[in-house]
Figure (tube, helix red, strand yellow):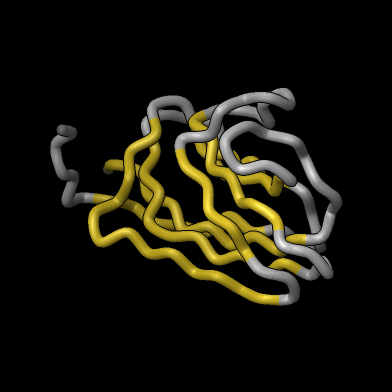
Length: 116
């Protein structure tokens, strides 16, 4: 179990247009506080969160993933920020447990914190 950090400097990383991925932070350690995603696609897809400094190759295994339905938004907030050792990268995928990058049809807004 990681130690809970109280002194955090928070900021947002977001896309400026529809995208398939977003490199939220490429420095470590970093804490994920929350994520909001809008799926503009006409089909469901998976949103993956990777502990990485750049977009991983297809077939990479995410730290976690969740499904998002067509033309909907989903928001996840962590009561206790989740620590990432390398960085935070979010992406869409047509498969859940391994990355198969999708089209540029998501809007990402990610809330991040770093220890101060």
